[in-house]
Amino acid sequence: QVQLVESGGGRVQPGGSLRLSCAASGSIFSINGMGWYRQAPGKQRELVAAITTGGSTAYADSVKGRFTISRDNAKNTMYLQMNSLKPEDTAVYYCNAEVVRVGAGGLWSGWGQGTQVTVSS
Image (cartoon, rainbow, N blue to C red; front, side, top):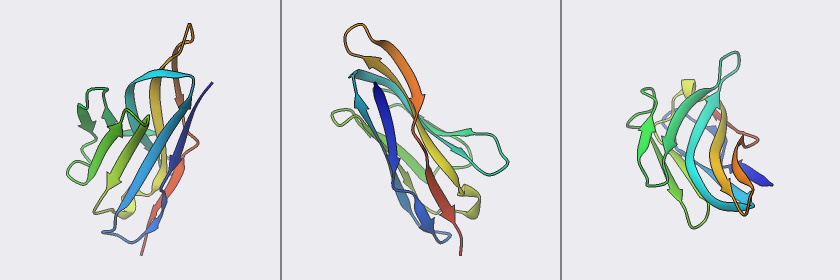
């Protein structure tokens, strides 16, 4: 069993900041790529940022220069620092990870439950 748990969402005014965390737990040998996605009401889920095991990153154009993705491999945790937030960043944010499970468990890829981010004055 592998679980991903997001935290850190909330309500913030435009221009504010939030830091999201995604903690992976369970039968984990190692974690390959990880990513943050978001889904606004009535819209499809979209990739916000991704990070490899080695720390290479990629961002959606809409968040470049404002969001920073990072990970702590020792803690099996990924972060998303969000600065200069805009109303259009309002969405449920989900984390995704590809996990190599211990023993003969093989690869697992799944989602957390999501955390709501609301940017509003």
